[in-house]
Image 1 (spheres, rainbow, N blue to C red):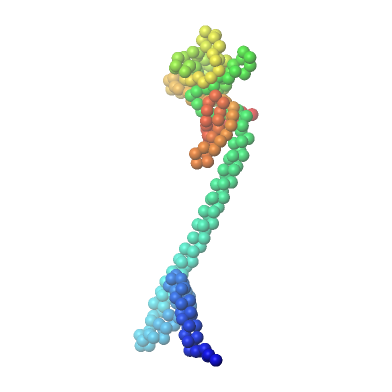
Image 2: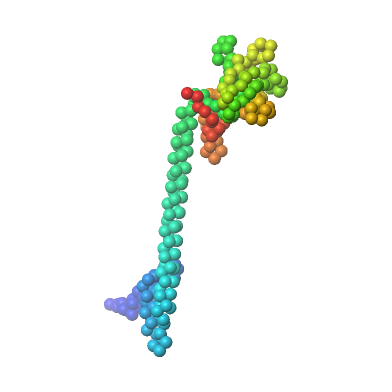
Length: 245
């Protein structure tokens, strides 16, 4: 009958124990906790020269330094946790904002909106009826307001005399007829508007705003939502100045 050498078994057990200890993470072995600090402090007190003991100030200084270091480490761990949670919140918030934006944009389809544009669209709204709705964007009063409508070649085909107003903005429409009364086709036309500023007496340019219907919406670069406006092309939601009732 064979027998087991107990000394060999003990050696193997000791080897396994040492290996497990060696496999502890470097951070765990190098981290000093409160128990370690007070153990070192007790050892220091026991080994000090009784004729020249450490002063109270030195002891307080050491304890304060350890408390501060431990507090900073704890603060760093909490900040890492906060950063991780905040990053997760931002990611979720971005998804929610994108979803809300998409829902809001989809509800805009079919609505008439106003955007800043030098070009305006002339629409055929009936068998022989055309209309270009637009708005001059300015504040305060303006005198002798003129709107020059230009075709694709840059030629002025009609000048609208809108007179004066004490307060902007000013909404106007063009029926699509040129200066000779000829009906122009539906499409894009360039608007050059000016007026005399009553405070300076100088003729100045006026920004034009064009009305159009939202035909569709889509996600563009960076998840930005673009709207396709009938006759005008693509605009972002941030370009909307007004939504018609």
